Length: 109
Image 1 (cartoon, helix red, strand yellow):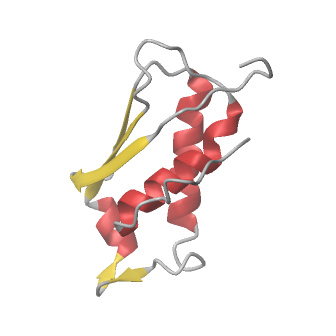
Image 2 (cartoon, one colour):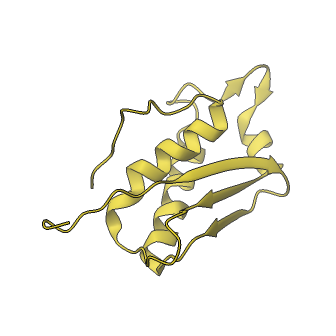
C-alpha cells in the first residue's frame, strides 16, 4: 500500500506428530522467527492463557505430540518483517483451541 502495509492471511493447523513446526509460503528469516517466537510464547504461557488443561488434556504434553503447520497463502509474494508476531500467535491459538479468530479482526505490528 502507499503506507507500506498489506493484508497478510495466515492459516495454522495442528496434527499428530512429534512437536515440530512447518512453515509454508515465500517467507524470509524474520517471518520464520516470528512463528518460532509465537510458539515459544504460547508454550511458555499456557497457564496464563488459561490453556494448560483443555478437555482434561495436559496441553504441554499434547503440544509435544502434535506438529504445527503455519501457512502464508499469498502465493509468490515474498513476506518478511517483524510485524506478524501477534497475528501468528492468534492463528496458532485458534488452531490450538478450535476457536476461529473473528472475521472482523486484524492485527498490526
